[in-house]
Image 1 (cartoon, rainbow, N blue to C red):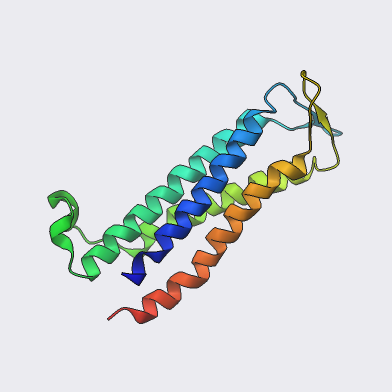
Image 2: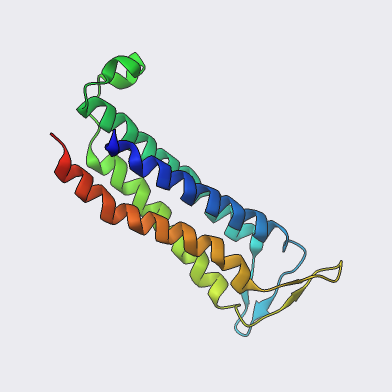
Amino acid sequence: MVLFLPLVLVLVAQLATLVGIGSLRKTYDNDFYLPGGDSFAPQAQNRKLLLACFLELLAWTWWAFWVARRLGLSEILPASLAEPQISMAAILVPYLIGMVLIVRVGRHLGRFSDLRMIRPDGSEILPVDLMRPLGLAVNTYGTLALLVPLLLYLLP
């Protein structure tokens, strides 16, 4: 059952990403442009983060099915998922694309880190504060990249 440990870390990373999405949602009424025309674009960044969440959930759902098959727990899987072979590519490709999207959003927000956004209600938002939950999500997914090979080594 230790093979299902990555799913707990995925839950933490998903929650951190959703907190980042919620923080960015607060900045929808503030759009800044850097010299050269680079837009802060909070709605576009949230779309990328939502796609990353979906891809990561897809990858780790396939991981759960793959582990269940390896442990002989096929009877708990739906019949349509118990038969087909799940390749590691089906797990790695969405995982890596999701990671790239989260890192790209973090880099994009990092370009605006010196700006202070004043919302219409007078509150202030710093892009650095928006990046903290995304940093936690990236670190958690990076930890999974180290943990999963160790777990695969432990497989019977």
